[in-house]
Amino acid sequence: MPDPAPANDPALLRIEGAVATITLNRPAAFNAIDLAIAKKLEALGAEVEANKDVRVLVIEGEGRAFCAGGDLQTIGAAAEANNIPAVVSEMLAHYHAFITALRRMPKLVLASVHGSAAGAGLSLAFMADLCIAAEDARFTPAYAKIGVSPDGGGTVGLTAAVGPRRALQIYLAEDNFTAQQAQQWGLVARVVPAAELKAATREFALRLAQNTPAGLAATKALIQQAPTTSIEAQLDAERDGIIACMNSEEFRVAVKKFTSKSK
Image (tube, rainbow, N blue to C red; front, side, top):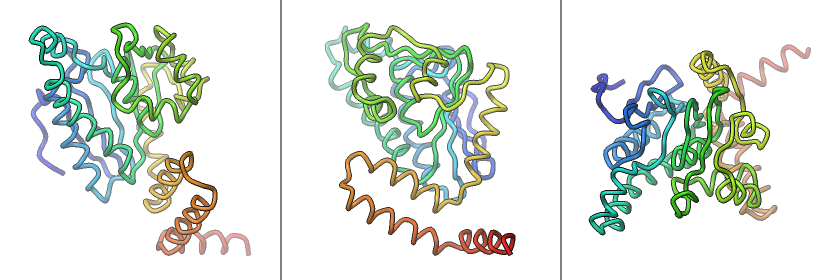
């Protein structure tokens, strides 16, 4: 594990066994995404992806919010300077590299949301493979309010969870919605009291980390590709995936344990 990062870093990483945690660390700005945090997240995402011991990545926010979305101070200054394409393109090049790593990495990504998840923060919460939220969490699409379209992978993660019609409703006709609504729509796996979020997140992450690396990676990949893959190709991928998992030592141990119990 690397030396502890300075407390003023825009994002922090800690690794405890099979669970890594990335903390968005701009609490004074409600963890809004600017160029500095985008670059840091890209670097931390690559570090987690390369770590073979990590099975689950938790993403959380420091302070009163999970993430307030794109930094409007940065974007507003770019608009004043008539320089939006260059500024936003550079920021999203790094931030979208981080989002791509979350999608690609053979680890489960768990968003732990409290307070506000707005704009790109909402996208991040639902681009993660699973989401746990505090009872007081609020999700705010925000994009329509300022006349823009979504970014940060929201149209991928959210649409995969709720379908295109609900996704259009959320992005174009919802000012905000609660953790309970998000759970009803299939976006949030668990809702817990705010005071219990840290402990419940840890418990959930450890439960997910009990899965073998091979089984976890293959399941994530298969589920991601299913909507755009033909049935023949998907069944072939399932065959290849399960055979690869069965070639692991973890599978042999598990089967031996199961068969010895059934005798």
